[in-house]
Length: 277
Image (cartoon, rainbow, N blue to C red):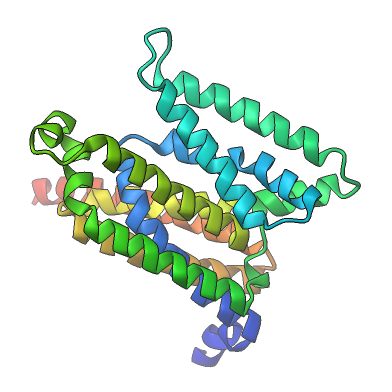
């Protein structure tokens, strides 16, 4: 029984997928909590698909897809940041406009490629089981950078999230903190895209952090809980994918969302049960 449970992870490419997924879960836990706490979920979703123009152009020119994705995501983040104080429309409107515009440009560029359908499918869904050793190094480097920035910027990020005016009063430079947070999101989405595709990347960015916010209060504890839930989603998703012959990346994302609803249900049921005793 035990041997059958661990059987998938004895295969080298599944083992690499597990390690890569856990590293990605760590990166997403550090960034995803800030994304949700600051109400930036729609920006994360828009950025994950807004990377397509940069990826498409980099592919046509034969350049680095990661660099192209990062440049495109950063351009979108700068655009949203520039328009967020507009009196004519809100931030969500500016995100939606830039999202549609950049995604359209990306599809137009990719449509000139003979492998249009294949390229777009790979961009959206990726292939977790195709993770290479070089991808693990890239994920590890991203985890180190994100962790370092998160530690150094923890106090400004915290003040910016809960009281921007007080952050300015304390001299914590909320504008710089906001820019650093956008850069962290850009790095996370660009690296995640290059390794697993946008669907599982966004799933691990949002679902574990949202679930962790339901059960923990202090942000370090929330991040650690999000990491545990994200890692569990990767482990369970890969196991289901192996035996059910489903797409690994999509299965991981689905499990991450399912875990959120499990946590939400338990959180609602347990207090109700205590009240009846």
